[in-house]
Structures are given as C-alpha cells and as structure tokens.
Image (cartoon, rainbow, N blue to C red; front, side):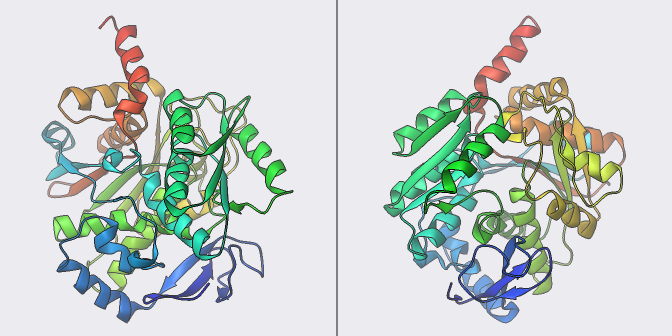
Length: 392
C-alpha cells in the first residue's frame, strides 16, 4: 500500500521487519504489522489538528496511516469524557474520568478501528470484508462496509447479544451464527475464508484495525491539554489498548506529552489470559481452557494480540487486573446510578480500577481515565438482571 502524508510504511510487531509492500502480514515471519510514522510530519499534522474545528476522526484523520480525506467515516470519535466525583473520592486521586465510547456511530469503540480497516480494504480493491466477532466488531463492519460500498460477512457465536446480531443485518451485512462460543465462530470463519477472496478484518490480521484506536489517545491529550497519568481499559484481543499505546507513544516521541500514561488491562476473572500471563511474569499469553464470563465482548480465551498487550503494559509501567462478574456488574450499575451510563463490559474497567486503587496504584494529584467500550443500552438486560438478583 502506498504510504501517506505521515505514514512511512509498516513494521512487524514480532520480528521488527520493515515492510513497504502491499501486505497485511509480515512476509518474513507472518507476524502482525503496525503502521510507522514520520515524526516530523506527524508533529506538523498535530499542530494543524489543534486548530481544526472538526470533531473526532474528521479532526485527527490526517494523523492516521490513511488520511481522513481518503477514509470511510461515519463521524466516529469525539466521544464524551465524563467526570466521576464519587470514584475520584474513592480512589483519592485528582480526578477520575470515563471515556464513553457509546458516543460512536454504532455505539462502541470498534468503530474507530473498523473505520480505518474498511478504508484500507477499499483502497486495496476488496469487494467483501469478513471477520469473526463477538458482536460489536461485526455491527461496525456491516455499517462501515455499507458506507464504503462493500459487502461484509460476520461470523458470530450464538450467545452474541440479539441487538448486535439484528444490527449486523439491518446495516446490510451477511451473518453466520455459529453454535458455541467465540472460538467456534473463529473456526467457521477460517473454514469460509480458506476458499474465498474476502478481505480479513480479523484482529491483528490487518495493520489498520488496531491502529485506528490511536485517536482515543489523541482525543484525551487534546481535551486534557496534557496526558492522564493512567488509563484503565477492558481488554479482549488487545486491539484497543495496543492502538491507545501507539497513539500516546508517538505523541511522546514528538514532544507533545512528557510521558506515556500507565496502561492497565482490565479483564473478567472468568476469562483473563492477559492477567494470568502478567501475574506469572510471562510475555506469552496462554489460552484459557474453560472461559466463562457474562461479558461476552471480553470472552476471548486466546487473544490474537496478547503479547502485544503485555509489551504495552511493560513499556508504560502499568499492569493487568481481573475481577469477577459480580464485581463487574455491581461497578457498572453503581456508576450508572451516579448518572454515568456504563455497560457491563465497561464495568470491567470500573471494578478493575477499584481493585487497583485498593492496591495503591493511583496517587493524589493523578488523572485516571476509564474506558467504557460500548453503550450500556446494548447490555441493559445484563445490568437489569443483576439488579433483579438483588431484589431491586
């Protein structure tokens, strides 16, 4: 793929090989690729974006590997940053904020990465994009593919929330509902793509899906006018946290921020392969044999980007934390009751941050950001069922 204004090519996350050719995987080792950037041009693009009145990707699109004018967009980004006084007091820090990704067009953080990945697919001449998904990514892929004039194929496990499955079809996407859990959907996807010419949007199968999430870091720095000290992010495959890390890392490299914030990966205790690897001091992430959590979007027993998440945590001095479903749901409804709508998936960041605070992870004077990846409305049945179990 041709390089753009700020992008200089692709680099392998596994072997470090630099790639200039049109490819989605490293030709040397088959590892995942990541766009690389010219620091001088990135700095110029940042200065121009600061004076731009556009919102979201329309403002920061030229800081991505495909410039905003060349991409497919639905107004993703510019999600609300909401203060949480109760958590601020509980944690004993300067302020706690929730980055509420429910404000994206299809209601989840997936829009950021899928927008860029679909843009790259269209530029490469693809006619159909395909992916295995727990739901949010499939809904986003269907919407953005339709916008780009492409077809989409989503492979979802049967336990995926009805709202996701319905909206995949409503957006014009094709869907295969696979009995079982996410690994079963992956197997069906791999069988289908082996005999097709579909363009894969599977996690870390394209350099652009994780790269699209760097705009979340840009928005935080822009709104706060500095970097937060810590970001707690629910973690599945690692797409979100890897992209956020790359965004902060590159802003630090060009002198916009003084340091990369500490990044914390939050997972549900019933499916926490990254937490398990972190606690054992391992860089390789082993699959969970029997995953079981109420948080479907996070039930990824063998994350494609597990090692890349560990590297980001190590590089920033952060960590990984797991909490059980009861704590996750209680945290989500507790924050919602304080006026901040929070999904069950987002409750993982809240309960994880509460556990971290108890461990002394946050200092007075620090700004802590929690990422809510999806709209609470989509997971309302989970939250309501939790309340009913308490007699509410």
